[in-house]
Each structure stands twice: as C-alpha cells, then as structure tokens.
Image (cartoon, rainbow, N blue to C red; front, side):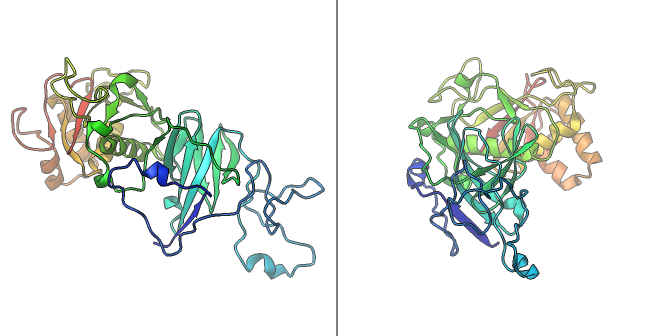
Length: 352
C-alpha cells in the first residue's frame, strides 16, 4: 500500500516514548514536515502559504479547483490540487499528523482533543466526539462533520501545545508491543461510542485498553447503534477488586449486552429484550482482535447468539471453535463459556 505521511513540525518522540517497545514506523516516502496555512485562514489553491483569501471575498467550494483566468482548460487537471480547508473548525482540536493511503478509507489522522486530553488516530467514519465525525483525511487536512456542518481541521504552523496529563493512544503501533503490566496502566478515556460505568474502575493495561477501544470503534463505524456500555475493568494499579473474583490485572472487561431499549443499561438479556444482531456484531468485533482468551456469557444467552450466528451464515467449524453451546454449561470447550451472574453483561478476558 502506498503511504504518504504529513507531520506537524514538532517531535512526536515524547508521545511515543511511554509506549513499551513501540516499533518505529518507516516509509520511503514519509515526510517529516509540512508548510501549511494556519487553521484560521482559508487556503486558495496555487497560492503561497499564508496567502489571504481572494479580495472579492469569494471562497472556492470545498474540493473544487479554482481555475486562474487565461489558463489553458487542461491546466486544472495537470496536477492534483490540495483540498480547500475552509471553513476552519472552531473546535478545540489539534491536528498532529496525517497519513494518506491509496484506499482513502484507510487514511489516518492523529488528533489531540484539548477537552479530553486524548491523542489518538482516526480514520474516515470515526467519531472524535458524539457529534463530530471524520469525513476525509487528505494531506494535512481533515474534513469534519460538526453537528451536520462540514468544517476543516488543518495542521497549523503554530505547534500544538501538549499537556503532561495528555494520554496518547498509539493506534498505529502493533498491540503486541504495548505493555501488559498494570504498572503502566491507563484509564479508559471518554469516547463517543461508549459510556463508562465508573472511571475509577476503568483502568487497564495499555494493550487491553487499546484493543478494547479499537474493537468498539470497529463495531461503531458505519453503524447506527446506541453507545456500548462498559462496566468494571480494574482499579488503578490492579489488585483485589471485591466482589469480583477476577479484574485484578487490567485485562478483564464487563460489557453490557445490546438491548432493544437503547436507554437500558446492564438490563437482563432475554429472547424478548436482546438485540441479537448488534450484540453478535459487538462480540465479533472483539473476537476479531485475535487477542481474546475467553468471553463469559450466560448459557441461555449463548443459545440466542449461537442461533443468530447460524442465521448469519457462520459455518459449523467456526461455531464449534467459538461456542460452548450446545454441549452444556459445564463443557470445557469454546471461547464463549457460561459463568454464573452474566445475564446482564458479558465478560471479556484478553490474553496476556
């Protein structure tokens, strides 16, 4: 895949330094810096960086090419013209880097949300906030939908000011290289696609939190669904967490079933209340991480999900690998196992 990166003129080494064993990315065509207009000013195609908008006040429509008078008709098609970053967003967001790809859906932007102090990587279709969605990423510019209005976020010539309390989630780093120790534990940050039962009980290893965030984001992308409700993970630093028998090591996560009533949180899953397509899609997103050791699901709820998976065409070999059902709640088989007390939520245990 051909990749092109545009980086803000500041060192990101300080962000990545805290990631245990993070691998350095390298591409032959990576760029180390970009001269970009400040986010507060419109950029006219063909103009020098920092040039003002046209004197008559006209602004080219986003994504359109402004043809200079007298220019040959074919000149506008000779070379790609950068996206017009106008109007600029007033949101408290800072664009740190972009990475373009031939498959536009795989382009990424590293953005700092000043409100939450979270620095993360986003693809088109991802939500930064509940009403803020990334529409496109294009060479130092991100097209956003802010409450239905199209706005643009650009890399600024003024360095983004970071805080010592910022939390950096290196989505581009292989999860296998992230720490699995609660000594390096991080808290699950606020997010547009999920709710947290209690922040004090939402601590996990860097690897588990990254896997959980990615799985929920993949589940939510392009799907109209209520937010995922996350229960207990671990306490800060790990250790005993009564009344739980587990949740000691930052790799156990309680997640509510998706129910037909979007306002229900941690309600009991039954044949009448369980939203089987969405719950199965959420489970699949977690299992697709290839880092799940077990999922604990009440045996009766397993039956509902097993039958739905059959309707979706999941083959018998895969069902045999995933489900304990129909072999009985004491059978030692399948990744999805019965455990008492899991009718109102399921429990995901990530591998070490």
